[in-house]
Length: 427
Ligand code: JFZ
Image 1 (cartoon, helix red, strand yellow):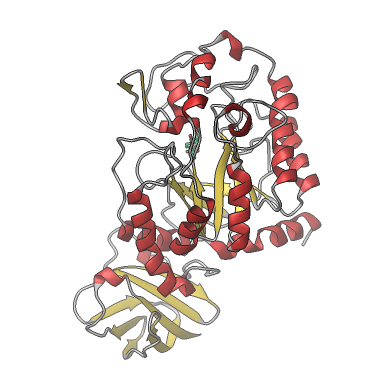
Image 2 (cartoon, rainbow, N blue to C red):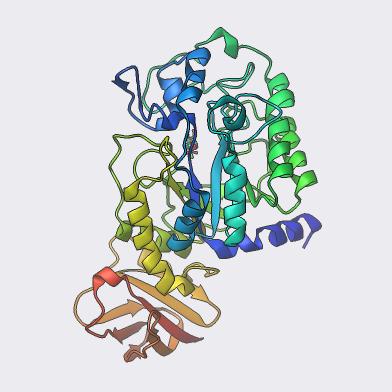
């Protein structure tokens, strides 16, 4: 194994165990919350400045209304812990250019520009450290709609109008490399210097401007300051990241080799919008978590706190419900390997279940079955014992050839999404 691969394996070991993380999109866009001057702009809320073509000076006015006094880092970290999330990644700066931390490199930040005289990144880093939740930051390295020279999305966005790549404010004009030198790289340096261990820097939307050379500026900064920090998949350039990000909300159809993560929303937006109540329910989220782990990935699930600093009540409720499942069944998730089978992933597979593994053990999480027993196809595995993970109670089973039939106690219901733990010998 070469040095580079060995270092990568060491760096990413905790992340391979962790499986489930909290993503947080929080910034000035929580103030307009999806509409601008009485008009609602559909789609993801953190893009409001782009969608409504808000001039910089006007967007800056939002700082006066951003005073999230109800922000409570401990409460957020508690929620993540309760849900069973092992890491947290928050937007330190999104495409609007507004820094959610105390930055000497640029005054457009929460400490210098708002009445809120606190640094949420510092408070969250500390709250996470207390609970052994790994703390990381999202940083929009290429797009910056506020700084001169910052890149701007060129294509139509979410089916919106085609602006032909144009900016909407002359103040956005400038030199991209100058922007990197003056703002983006210094801010990433600040984040890796002032907040203790940063587990991940989650870069995003490299567009066509993140050449290998420019991406290397960020890679070098991260590696020099904190060699253990992971670089997420959207830095740009080439081969400079520690893991791949799937498309947003996208889950592959089969086991995907390598280190990868699905970033996903709880409703249909990342940044808070007051009118988005299209929440996924907790059963759906547990299924997605198990589905992703059974395919070898991590699940990075987003919350969008409002302008008061509050995570929406529905998000808290749903994540708390997910947490009841992870607390009882975490052994099937944390550090678990992908399915060694694969047939259960077929869309017409019946019953509906997902398989994760540890050495000598299969975990079958059941989502749909009928009757008091379930029959699973386990080609090549000789089952030597079966139990219900949550209680440890032994379960009766019988096996012929590739099929195993497991008796389920009548206390177990579909709502439990029970995990059957199967010890095996390889045939
Ligand atoms: C980006 C951001 O533009 C968005 O605001 C949010 O932060 C999200 C997590 O990331 O949007 C993307 C980026 C990449 C894909 C989809 C949405 N993709 O590769 O499918």
